[in-house]
Image (cartoon, rainbow, N blue to C red):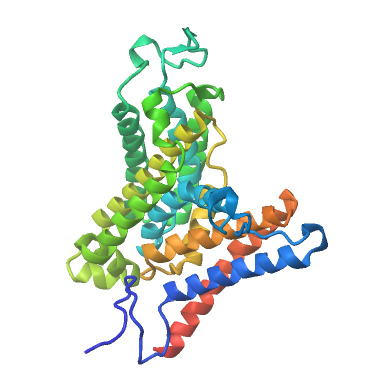
Length: 361
C-alpha cells in the first residue's frame, strides 16, 4: 500500500521519499519570512525597533498581535486570492490565464452599472449609466450579470484553446486586450459609482476574507474529492492518457476556464463593492499576482500538481512580503522591482521542484 500523497494536495508524510508535503514547506517559509521582517524591524536604524506583527501594548487590542496589520495583510490578498483559486485550476489542467486581471476591470464596470442607487444625498445619481429601470435593482441582479459575463469570457477562452489548438498564452493574452478595451469602452473611461447598500455590503469590512476562505474551502473539496478535480489533474499530468481513458478533454478545458473567469468576475464584484466604485484600471497586474500566488503555493506550471491549500498559503506569503516591504518603508518603485523578482523566483523554484521530483522518481 502506498504511504504517500496522491498528488492532489493531501497532507501525508511520504516515508519513501522522506519529504514533507509541499504545503508544510510553504508554511515554514511563511514563518521564516515573518521572522526576517521582524528582524529587519529591529536591525534597521530608521525602524527604531518596531515590530511587524506584534504590538506589546496589550491595552490597545487585548493581545500582543498587531491586529490592524494582520487584517490589512489578509484583506490585501483576499480579492486577488479569489482569482488565484481559478488560476490554480487552470494551471493544474496544463493551461495559463492572462486575462483575469483585465476581466476584473471589465466586470467591475459592467456590474457596478447594474448596482447603482437612484438617489445620492437626495439628488439624482450623477454617475448613472442607464435609465430609471436600472436603479436599486435587487443585489442578485448585478451578481448574476457579473458571473454571466465571466462565464462568457471563460467560454471564449476555453473554446479557443480546446477547439482551435491556440496556445493558452496567446488566447488569453488576446482576451487580456479585449477585456481591457471593454472596460474602457463601457462608459468611455468614466468611473461608475454609488451602489445600493445591499451591494456595498458584499465587500464591506472583512467580507472579502470571508468570501475568499469560503471559496477556497469549496474548491479544495471539489478538486480533491470530485470527478471534476480528478479529471483536472489527469489532463494536466498527461492529456493524451486522459483522452484515451475516456475523459472529454475539450469539454473539461472549457469548464475549467469558465470557472476561472467566473471567479475573476466574482473578485470584481467584491472589489467594486469594497471600493464603492468601478474604474477602468481595476485589476492591473492581478493576473500576474494570482499566478505568482499559485506558483509560490506549489502549483506546477507544467500542470498536474498543486492544491488549493498551497495556493492559500502562497497568497499569505505574497501578502506578508508585500506588507513587509511597506513596513520597512521600501519605495514603491523598488517594491515593483522586488515583486517582479519574486515572480521570476517563483518560476525558477517551480523548475527546481520539477527537476528534484524527476530525480527522485
